[in-house]
Amino acid sequence: MIEKARLIRAFFIRAVCVRVARLVLIFVLSNLATSVWIALNHVTLDKMRDMKINDQSIVLVMTNCPDKTVAQTIAKSILKKNLAACVNIMPEMMSLYTWNGKEEVAAEVQLLIKTTAHVYPELQTLICSLHPYQTPEIIAIPVVDGLPSYLQWVHEQTGLE
Image: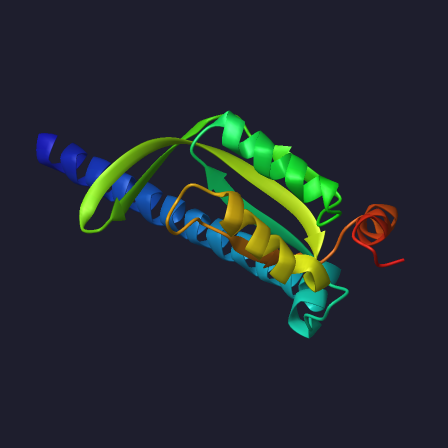
């Protein structure tokens, strides 16, 4: 009798596990299919696929500074020369990286710079001239989409009207 009860319990547990596994699989596949459909039909992703960078393209430039004083000096110089519409000075963060074969940990302050591709070369030159790092991080990321009035404002501030 005990053996029969054990077999019934094992059969029941197996049946429940199989059903749960099927439900999880259906859930995962349906969520994956929904995500793929959204991604394939999203207007911004369409713009990314068709994106061609030109002088009028808006870019988000990132650079990290060793402290707030350097960050403010660079940010003010950028704005004074109309090389960006806006510069955000982010709170101090911790950066971990390898430099000259040695693992480093440093406190840094990041600048997020909203600008246009046509002024990027001059912006890069300015950052390099003011930056204390031998090789500063300067990365330009194309902006795919945004509020039209904001994008127009960025154009105006950088000389593209």
